[in-house]
Amino acid sequence: MSVRVRFAPSPTGFLHVGGLRTALYNYLFAKHFGGKCILRIEDTDRNRFVENAADNLITVLRWAGIEFDESPEKGGAFGPYIQSERLELYNKLAALLISNNKAYYAFDTAEEIDEMRAKQAKDGGDTKYLRNIGRNSFTLGVSATDELIQSGAQYVIRLNVPENEEISFKDIIRGDVTVRTSDIDDQVLLKSDGFPTYHLANVVDDYEMGITHVIRGEEWLPSTPKHVLLYRAFGWEMPQFAHLPLLLNKDKTKLSKRQGSVAVEDFISAGYFREALINFVGLLGFNPSADKEIYSMEELIEGFSLEKVNKGGAVFDLQKLDWFQGYYLRTYSNTELAELLEVTLKSLGMNSRTQEYLEKIIILFKERVTFIKEIPEKASYMFAKPAEFEQDYFAKHWKENTIELILPLVNIYKETNEFTHTALHDLTKNFVENAGLKLKELIHPLRLMITGRSTGAGMFETMEVLGRQECLARIEYFIKMKEKENL
Ligand code: GLU
Image 1 (spheres, rainbow, N blue to C red):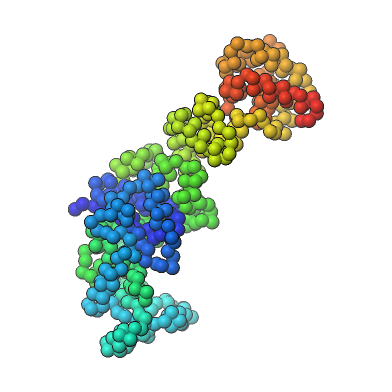
Image 2 (cartoon, rainbow, N blue to C red; image 1 turned 90 degrees about the horizontal axis):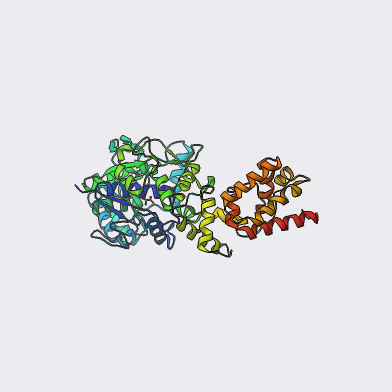
């Protein structure tokens, strides 16, 4: 049997990271077994429909490196892959269920349903649809039902859930699941606007599209018994189910927008690399081996197994994501990173520099940042002379006699032939030794004058990249300001 899986998002806005994890696991599973991964757009809930959301989903998934074998864009033998284009099929199959007595018509208004549920809630019980009380094929009888339909009355089609039975199914991740039918509502299958509900359309399409494994988030687990009943009602063979663990905040509550970004789009615009996000999301609930954390897409495909997916919730730890981001940043070449830096500078409206100069900045900062976009701020002094000088740093390292001590060294810098970090290091070391000083007595003031900051890359490396002229100009400027008591 060849594997066919699907990612079936509803186009209700952005792509949630949980959705990315579901899409990714479907993709990994399909590729692992040389099967097919399908994208199906589930847009039957017209109240939640968002224009362009489907295109956006496709763009984001493509960015992530998840390509589908069949999709609305690509087509395929089982299309259309957009549910709103398959309405006829759902209507036909809903009618089939009616004729087999597996479903029935119901004419209750929204107010009547609210009232029915409110009454039950008041008595402290479930708030189910009461087949014996509502206005439906059961209470009205066949001819009254037909008459109503003929007269154009609004109706829905509900699933005829059998009484007092146990519904069991096997979930690859969670094991055996059993639910009593008394706990299942007579689910609406077809709505009064002629659109199917998620349940009907999802089951019909999984069957019609030859889906072998349904891999989706745990939040869909309560829907699965209804789906099992639908497969039975149609007399269709069921796919296998695998419900992926919930994504949790660090405090173990369900991952929510309130505690930070959850939209993949936000991670992309924050500057995360695809490799970092995929590696991180790939390990939310599964790890092929206990002693390895860095995985490429190919390695995730190779090691993927639904049996290895954890049951327990997976903590969405942003620090971990940043660790992956930093790791992958350092796998890029200096040239590539310099190009990214150039794009960032442009987007900030900053003047760019030569590629060569940007690469030197990359070498200085690559180990010190997680994102390229940190560089314009952290290394602002590589682009312009410092606009400010850190006050605490100044107070701590600037002494009455600093200028006096440092001027002879500055003269040495003026005259040396070689302005490289090794030459600067050796000259400075010699100088402090002869003068009976400590290196840090001069290094900190130098850093302050040249960069204005207490932190940064190695001082001599920084000076080499800035160049002699720039360093001397900054030192002179600082001393002048100091003399004028402007600092
Ligand atoms: N349309 C559902 C969603 O938005 C699909 C759930 C499923 O995979 O069955 O996630």
